[in-house]
Amino acid sequence: MPANKTNPAPSGVPAALAAYGIWGFLPLYLLLVKSVPPFEFVGWRIIWTLPICLVIVLIRGQWANVRQAIAQRRSISILCLTASIIGANWLIYVWAIQNGNVYAASLGYYINPLINILLGTVLLGERLSRMQWIAVLLAGCGVAVLLAGALDTLWISLALASSFAVYGLLRKQLDVGSLPGLTIESAVLFFPAVAIAWWYASGPQGSSFAVSWQLSSYIVLGGFLTAIPLLLFAVAARRMEYSTLGFFQYIAPTLVFIIGLTVFEQELKPAQAASFALIWTAIAVFLWDMWKRSRAVSVA
Image (cartoon, rainbow, N blue to C red):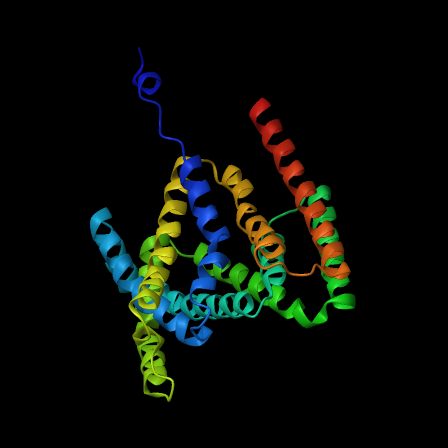
C-alpha cells in the first residue's frame, strides 16, 4: 500500500483554528492588562516577544534564515519599515480595545482582506472578477455608511485595515518566513521598547511591571500571545492551500465582534450594524466567487 495512504499528511486545520482563535479571543486578554497604558504595554509586548521568538527559532532550526535576511540590505530595510508599521498597528488595536472600541477593531480586520484585494489590483497588477468588484463595492458602501453615522470610530477601522494590508504587501515582497521576520522586527523595535518601559518606570506612577506578580505575569503572557499564533499560522500555511486558509481569517474578527456584543456589552449603533451587514455581504460574495473559481479549476 502506498506510503501516502498509510501515513497521510497532517492537516493544517487545527493549527489554523488555534491561531485565529487566539487572535479572536485577544480582547479578553487585554482586559487583564487594562490598567497598563497602551504605549507601555506595546513596549513590554515587544520586549517579551523577542526572547520567545529567539527560543522558537533555535528549536525549529531557523537561525540560518534569520542570518540570511539580516545579510541582505533590501530585506533588512523593508523589515525595519514593517516593524514600525506592525508596532503602530499593535498600538492602535490595544488602544481601541482598552477604550471600548471593540466593534471598530473587529470591522478593521473584516475590511483588511478587501483592501488587500485593492492593493493587489493597483500595485501588483492582479485582475479581479466581476463578482470580486461587486464585493469591493459593497465594502466601500459599508465604509461610506460609517462616514455618515459613526465617523468618530471610522479612523480606527481604516487605520487597522490599511496598516495591516501595507504590512502584508511589504512582507509579500520578501522571501523571509513569518517567524524569522517577526524575530527581526522585534529586534528592530527592542531598544525603542526598552526606552518606553524605562520612561514609564521613571515617571511618577512607576512601571506597570512592578505593580504585582500577577500583572507582571499577564504582561509576559503578551509575548507568548504574539509569537505562538504566528507560529501556528506558519504551520497551517504549510499544510493547507492558501486560498483555503483565507476562509479562516474571518474567525478572529467574528470572535472579536461577539465578545464586544456579549462580554463588553457594547451598544451596536445603527450605522455600525448597517456597515457590518454590508461588509459581511461583501465577504460572502467574495468567498462564493473564490469557491466557484477553485471548483472550476479542480474540475478542469
